[in-house]
Length: 333
View 1 (cartoon, rainbow, N blue to C red):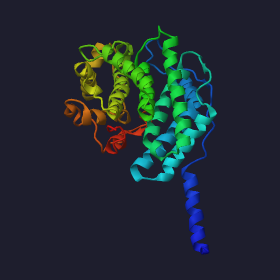
View 2 (view 1 turned 135 degrees about the vertical axis):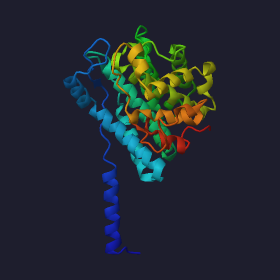
View 3 (view 1 turned 30 degrees about the horizontal axis):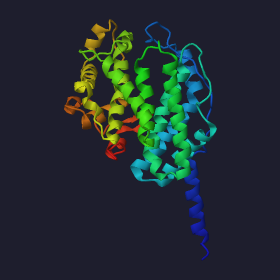
View 4 (view 1 turned 90 degrees about the vertical axis):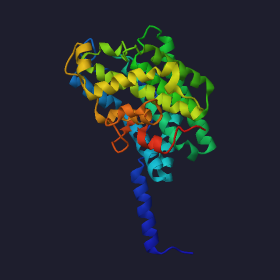
């Protein structure tokens, strides 16, 4: 049966809108060359000119991560299969290109490695959200690529055993953990747990992290930035039927309590870090609190700090944390 001109026009308009909502996937760079931007020893003061250069060099990776977060969120929120197809297409293109598996060029610090691990975290979490819509061939290709990238991020630490294992180490764990639970890879899961346990060991009895207390006016900011990956790893562990929130007598609880108190009143960090006023984390970086409210002991301590009605979009955590929790992305298998 022939379609009427009106129906054909509507079909073309619909296809054009879908194409506009899903830009053609970009080429996935194999090598990364990005410089850092802090100008002081405590790494608390940004050199704005260098920061601009860093953002420009990071744009291909930020654009990739933004598309994945946007499209996978749309799939979770609206059940939009076209959005899932779009996210998968971007992942598949970067997998085919062997993106982020080349040289991580060191300029003035290890920012190239940092960008790789953050991008890996976004990609792997987004993959957990849309993997059920991929074909067997796509799953094989993307699974293999994410595993290779995750192992490359781990190699950075094994090749540099003297590197300070601070928040950057925990963020490596997010991508490794997300890849492990998506692909059911026991070896990567064990690596992720080792990173998580190291994070727990770093938490002192007062809830502080020694490496992050040296960050001057950004001490509170970096404690929050450390709580984000650790809380998300515990959330993801639920998919494997493990409760990481209670490990080591709920050691993570001490860090969460300290950060929650600091968010309400940064004065303690002003005094103990010896630098004031503290840089208070922006609201958009508090989405991790939703996971703790839902599944950590005494989640009510976060009442008033963040709710599901707040914008919980955190690109490095794969998009909207509230959607991840509401749709049960990491509910037990």
